[in-house]
Amino acid sequence: MLIRDGSASARRLLRKEIGGLPVYDPGADPDEVMREHGLRKVIKLSNNENPYGMSPAAIGAVQKCIKQGLGRYPDPTGKNLLDILAMRYGIKPDRIVLGNGSEEILQLLCQAFVSLGDRVVTQAPCFGLHEIFPLVMGAKLVKVPLGIDFKYNIEEWRKALAVPTKLVFISNPSNPVGTAFSRSELESIIQFCPEDCLLVIDEAYFEYAVHEDGYPDAFQLLKMQNRPWIVLRTFSKAYGLAGLRVGYGIASCSDLIEPLHCVRAPYNVNQLAQVAAVAALEDKEHLVRSIYLVGSERIRLTKMLRKEGYRVAPSLANFLFIDTMVDASFIMDKLLCKGVIVKAWREKGYGNFIRVSISIPEENEFFLQAFTSIKLSL
Ligand SMILES: *Cc1c(COP(=O)(O)O)cnc(C)c1O
Image (cartoon, rainbow, N blue to C red; front, side):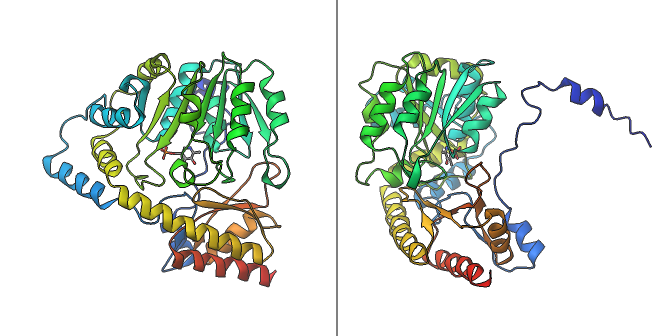
């Protein structure tokens, strides 16, 4: 029977840039995995969340806020949080933008600055949204591949940036690899990057990496540069507020921030996220503890996996990028059956890799056992 629901016309309404775009892959849902495989316990190692959750101070702030009621719109400017961040960075608040997660800021940047046909450069393998959001605008996306042994290929970056480019997305540390550009490598890229190009450094894992040898703090590196740049940070990862959605961007000048206010929705950061972020910033103890515990597990797990013969990228973040030496989707499915959710990488050239978030020791051990037992049964 012919269904008359207007779907043929609906499809014709679609912008041609959107047709054929991939949907961002968030990984499997724990409840669904539990139901599907009849499991009592499922461990989620697919989204790089903080296994210790949000800070007790932030939980307290959220509870207080709920008690006071949420019947009114939140502060559309997020002034309280903005002022605290501005003070921390020693800049005026008009150089900071808040987002419903830093992901939203990636989207706003593309909406405000990327036109049809503009060239956008990012790395490969890359964070999905660094690719999807430019493509939504009809950008021409160029990816600079990693060299051998997870090393950056600076000569490839020089070539990629020698062509007129509108915007550069770099995640440092890299998601999914976990490695980071060294100070001198990042300096080279800044130098190659044309002055009429917006350089975006996404530091979602900054807090995990900042105390590691040779990791460059992009804000410190860029603040003396006379060029357009924006550094993105988030409360979703080390701060453990992923479920509340709040991140921020610090720009070289307020002229980069003002247009973002035109494209963003007025109440993009909800009230609970605002108060939780303020409280989380002040709770140093929870942050330091999370970073320390995850960092020592990162070292332990890397060592164990390498001992088993796996190639593991040297990570500065809260996850590991592991060469399974077989099809990663196969490994991912096997792990799902055992109650472990990881992310299989699907980008060309990386189809054998899984990305695994570091969790509490007990869960990491469970993963390790499950993963190595698959190899034995192959
Ligand atoms: C997790 C992640 C983000 C998303 O952060 P939100 O603040 O939760 O939106 C952004 N960029 C990279 C590279 C990430 O890995």
